[in-house]
Image (cartoon, rainbow, N blue to C red; front, side):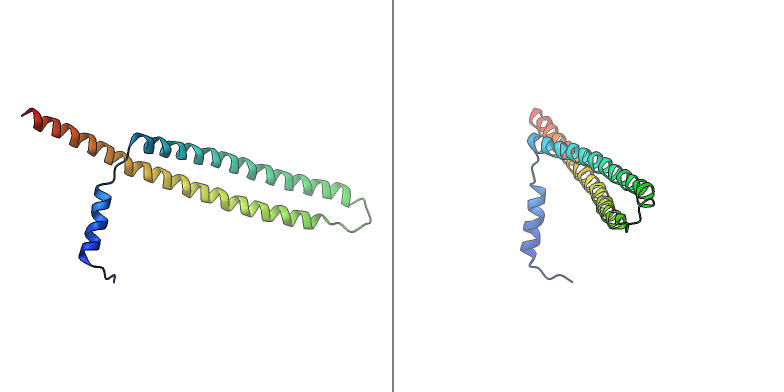
Length: 129
């Protein structure tokens, strides 16, 4: 249960009603959406590259370390690759969430633009009467 004075609640809702979104805000939101899409491409490509490097490391280890009589230290390198892969998978998931949040924000902005345009048109119609 939340206790708050009635006036405070009314002030919060009135701030949301008076929210104005202009063209530069829409452009900034579109740039953000594009940047997130580019980030997703970069992260997924980086993930595929690191996975491929790990596989190459394993192949190299099988070829070279099996011939030598020394102790193989490739396990340490593979563990580091595994850690990087887990981090990148997390970043890819976070970028998916960020993309959905950007889309959600864009969807919230679009109806308010339509409503404000409709209200302007209604005001023009009323002035013509």
